[in-house]
Length: 309
Ligand SMILES: [Zn+2]
Image (tube, rainbow, N blue to C red):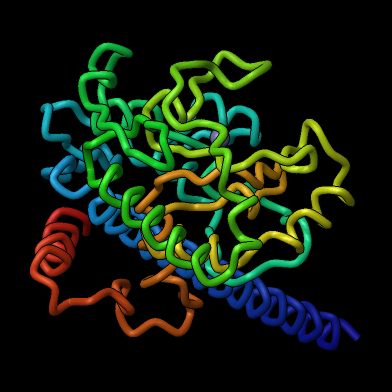
């Protein structure tokens, strides 16, 4: 009897050790997988930011396990503060990782979205690129003529050029389909230095990087029910959306907090959606999808590989 007990105890010890060991193994594997995904995402986000704000980011620095982007001004921007934040905290005080967390999708949608990709804005980044103060931003504005009116837009980072291109393309579709025109004109506004209503955060219109096209009562989540927003979303001409997206604008119609008349120049989101939107599990390299024949892309990939281990 005693012998059986000893054997049983040894047996149980072995089995427990086995389970303990396998559990540890799995845990390590999971942790490594999580780290791997984090690292891939970080590199892809940084590449998208560098491509979207070309010339504004000049270097990368890692210090005390943290990654910083070095701006042309010499200022640095932290990639990830590693704090656990609620969505509201992320909106109020985002790092670059928070900003890029939600993926903008170039596909058509036919219902109000569950997320707000691009609605988190990193003000330090925007100020570095488009102007630090109202005065600095105003000095960077250029007027775009549409109809018999002028619309001010930021000339930095090709924002004005991309708006100009979009509006020319939109005019061309209006010529063949005159039903589109009422969605464009009268344009509700471009540059306007103001805070977002009900908040103390600057609107993207303050930087001269957003345009509101013709307004409808169902365009904005604060004005309309989800059902009314969905109806407006589905009636909205998709060729307008395509044109703006092709020119590096994201559409507020793809937000949970919908803003259907609003288009915002956010090349980092369009870059990521266009080139890097694949399931990261099946990637051969973290930059798969990027055009490595392009000199600028290649340079940034090399920089990221050299600086982030
Ligand atoms: Zn707007």
